[in-house]
Image 1 (cartoon, rainbow, N blue to C red):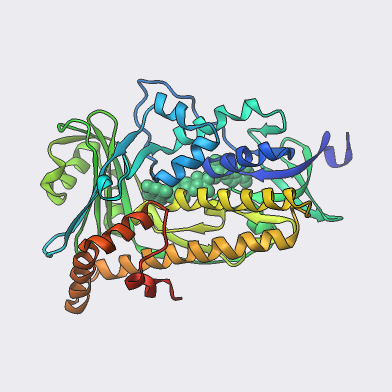
Image 2: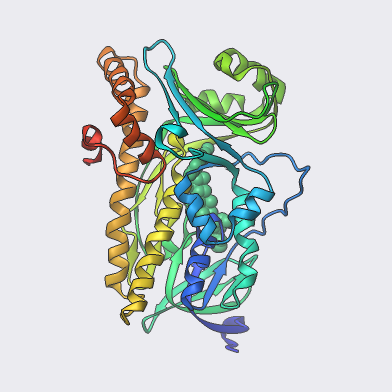
Length: 411
Ligand SMILES: Cc1cc2nc3c(=O)[nH]c(=O)nc-3n(C[C@H](O)[C@H](O)[C@H](O)COP(=O)(O)OP(=O)(O)OC[C@H]3O[C@@H](n4cnc5c(N)ncnc54)[C@H](O)[C@@H]3O)c2cc1C
């Protein structure tokens, strides 16, 4: 339509979401029933699922609360038909310490504490539901090359030479968010000294219903169960130690893991591996006029307790609910007032989780005696049934921290 600068088509939308990963797609599916017109712009087409495919390296521990959102989006039944692994137990202990704590689903009267699911399958199961909404347009592969604010709207020019106009622009484009940068929103960010090695493994032990994490002086070692005799291992260590293993063969990595990991792992072979730097990053604002940030575009958290995606899904639920309320009260649903309510609620909750993870990171990676006592105190304290109940519910995304742990929310 508009032929300036080679732009060949111009379309008006209520909402443009940049980033069609797990969080951006869930956002589109939660807004579609409200009757808004939505463009979902994604840079990469995910690879289709095949049953004999190797497990992806990137997996997430999905909380029962996030399952609820995935059900609302219509994605859960497809996930059950692809692959996922529910777990009923979560064990946390310290090498050379007294603390050893096991949480069980039955303690809080639920069937499962969570589900380990490959990130790509989460995305695919959500994408599968896009087709049923005529008010969602998926534009993929595409990336914004220019974002401007014009006459109370956003104008987004894509590398496909399409131009989109939006009343509300949502940045769901991950940690390096182009939306966030284009809108001039800064971040507070720092890199942890530790990095992590993630390995997809085949285990001699049959399918497991437990996820465990052992804390050691060099960093935690974690096991996340996958369907059949499979699992995902996460080995946190000093960044340079992880870097050293980068070019090792699967067999060499397996030998190093065998020597370091607890015997609970049993015999195993490494199928695939990769390494990740650990970064903490919090956007200085979650909104600006006509724009909102969700998921990793707004916050990146230490993956220690597997909460990143779950927090992103909570952002989605919160923003969708506020927009729905505004629409039902005939208010301007994309007003700064609505967006600021979103920012207030989610920035506080996400900040609290980030502080909690930092507290565990610094307390459990330090061999000084007073911190060792604090660690043992935490694990012993969390074993007290009433506190344990709160801690499980917090990890499941259902509660705020119990009073004895409330000091973690400061700062
Ligand atoms: C080692 C590790 C383990 C983790 N384990 C867990 C866990 O167990 N549980 C958990 O809850 N979280 C976990 N996380 C965190 C989790 O992976 C992230 O929080 C999650 O991926 C964030 O999702 P997102 O959709 O916001 O961003 P991303 O997953 O980064 O998705 C962003 C999407 O936007 C697209 N995109 C990017 N730029 C553009 C652009 N310019 N234009 C168009 N599209 C664009 C990308 O292609 C992608 O599809 C872990 C993280 C790490 C590093």
